[in-house]
Image (cartoon, rainbow, N blue to C red; front, side, top):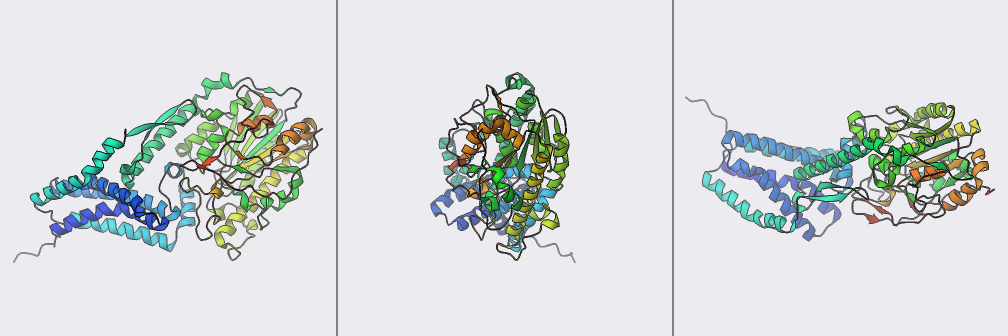
Length: 564
């Protein structure tokens, strides 16, 4: 008697599971469609082109011999599953499509930050949806591998049907889609080649491939520019003091992380999140209407410290004018994953990364630099309010509790602001005790939407959603009495007069040049916030370049400075 053989699925299962594999990548778009209540006429072409690409990816399984066909289904189905899970997770968390900013964040992060992110976003519903999607892909792949393919005439008929259904889309892409790549301006004088992102590339797998190509292209350009700073040293030389001005001995520029000004009591937040800065408010110049250029630290820092958008680091402007430059960061130095930031700040005389410690550990470095002879320009990059919020402050700052209004997420975020308040006040205290001509400038790299736009939805930050709270950052300056004594007219007529101007923190080095009382041929008075010739410009945010029209913050009190 022959032993029973393992039961195999028939041709119907083969065709059905192959079709299911083709449809499953639509899951993120289906979620976005129902979540946004979009019109069907917008969803239909997206679904059509996703199915078209799925057909092209899976069609070889119809014609390959049985073993290679199984391998093809496992590899292509697995790749589609992984891409769909990545794009789907982003869609469920943000309610938005994957984009270059999200991809950059993924590529330039470490396992600790991934863990922090997952803790903030994972919920039973998210886990269940991802598990269900994974099980569906795994089941379809396993069933297809175990199924017998149909006869050749059936396979040819299926391919012919798919080819006819796809013909319109392929013809339209060839006729109206233009070239596969296009040039995108990345500076006033240079452009790079991007893969275009039409309907035909919204399939999770091809879309991720396209985004990754654009990420590599962008990275390569930025790295080349940053590393070629030596070629630009002559262009960056020649900064001279403003006639009659007295350059300060010490400038501290503090770059915050993910801080939303609407959560600062200095800007009117009902919780007392910045009590020490509130007490210092009469000494501060607080700016009410400043936004960041983007929601990514890497690109935000590039916009702040690159000369005229050409991705040339601006730090040599100051070092060649006699300032020793220091870059101190509480964040991680991730080596290859942080090449852009490392290359940007490489021209600073000193760079120290503390790799994830509390921000108060930067104070000793700033104090040490302040004690050095000569002029010092110190950049302190905080860990600030980076996710996971609970890990950004010592437990003694756990003032706002999960049971308070707003729940655990908002309370832990506000606790990060409370801690940042203490660190900033301590840094100001270091400068006060030195009795030098000194100043401190603070701005956050970007903000986050922590239940601000939607009390029921944590939107975090995303260039596709581009809500106002993701860009609205705190911005203030502090000046020592000695600085005001030497440059009182500038503080009163330049800085104080600019408190309510609309500003986007691109080319922040211009404001630092003003604080240092330096001039250079690259200095543009129309672009510097502190210049009387400043010209307000249209501020755009997000991948679509939406015009920002947010309301300015409400500051508790403003500093008063003599114009002597």
